[in-house]
Length: 468
Image (cartoon, rainbow, N blue to C red; front, side, top):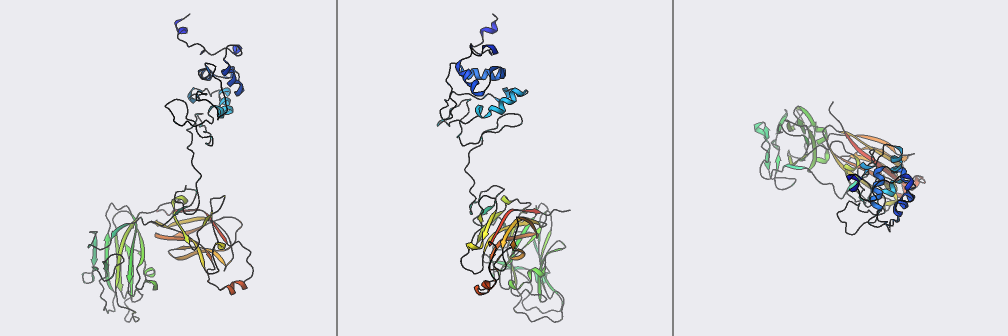
C-alpha cells in the first residue's frame, strides 16, 4: 500500500457504481433515492460532500420542521461541476432541496452550516455563474396608506408637511449678512429699515422717496453679486409694496443683462400691502442679480392717481439647490385638502373621489409639491378620470394658477405633460367637487350623473430641461 492510502479517512473514497447497494451507508442511499439519483450521476465533489454528511449512518429527515442541525450542508457552489448536463440538471432539479428552507436557530453559533431562514422567506436565486445568492431579508409588506413617508421609487412619497430645505441668506436683522450687496444711484440707495418686515424686525427698502414727482423714470437698484464658485440654484424672496402698479411704478429682477422676473408678474393687485414670494433661477459662477424698482418707467408726463404712497420692501432672501430630474418616489408630496387622496387597492395609483366629500359645496383633494429648476422642464403623469363638469373635474395648478383641467370618462390611463417654469414652482394636482360653486338647485337641474366622480393618478415624474 502506498503512503498516500494510509492518510485517507475510511469511507471517503468515491465508491464504484456497482457497489452502491453494498458499500454505501443507509443515509447515503436514502438521500440519493430522495433526489432520484444514483451515485454515477454525481461528480466526485458532490459525492464527497454527501459522504461527509452521511458518515455514521445519520438518519435523514427532509421534513423542514424536523430536519436536524447536522443535516446536509450545501456544498460550495464553486465545487459543483456545472460544465456538463448532469451538474447543471442537478442544480436545476434539486436546488430547493439542497438550498431549501430550514428552521431558524434561537442562538446561532459560528459554523459553516447555513443559518436557517423562516419558511416564508423566498428561496435564494441563482446568478448566471450558478452561485447561490444571499438569502433576502424578510421584510413586512410596504404599507401604502396615506401619510407614509418612506416608500420605494415606484410609489408615492407622502409627507406630513413640505419641509423648507432652503438656506436663509439674508434677513437684514443684523445689517447685511452678505458682503456682496451694492446699490445705485447714490441718491436713491436701498437701506435697511424697521418700518415693515416679513420675519423679525428689519427689512430692506427701496430708496425712491414717497413724495417723488417726475416726468422721467426714477430708479433705485439693489445688486447682489454671486461668487465664482457659486454652484447655482434658486433664490426666493418676499416683496411688500404699498402700490406696485404700472404705469406708476414697476419692479423687475435681472440676472446680468436678462430680465428673469418681469413687471407683469410683480404688478399684481394681490401685491398691495401683502408679503408675496417670488423666485429666480441663477446659474453657477459669478452673476449680478439686480432688483430694479422704478417710478414712472415709461416716462409719462401725466400718471394715473396713485392709491397709496411709494414704498417697496424686500425680506427673507433664501437659496435652494436645483432639483434636477425627479422620479415619483423622489417627489415629496403633501396629501391634503378637504379630503386626502387614497391608495387604490391592488395598484400603484392613487384615487380621489367626490363621494368622500360631505355636502355639495366646493371641495377638493390636493397633492402639492415643489420643484426648483434652472431651465424649467416637463412634468409628466398618467391620469384617468370619471368626472362630469361642472359637478367635478381634475385640475393642475402652478403657483396657484390653473394650467390644465380635464373631465369626462377615460377609457384608460392617459399620459399627459405640462411645462414647468424655471425657478420655484409650487405644483398642485387637484380633484375638485363643484368647482364653480353652484347651488344644489342648479346642479340638480343638470340631470343625472353617469360618471363615478373619481380621478386616478400614477407615474408622476419631472424631466429638467437641459442647456443645448
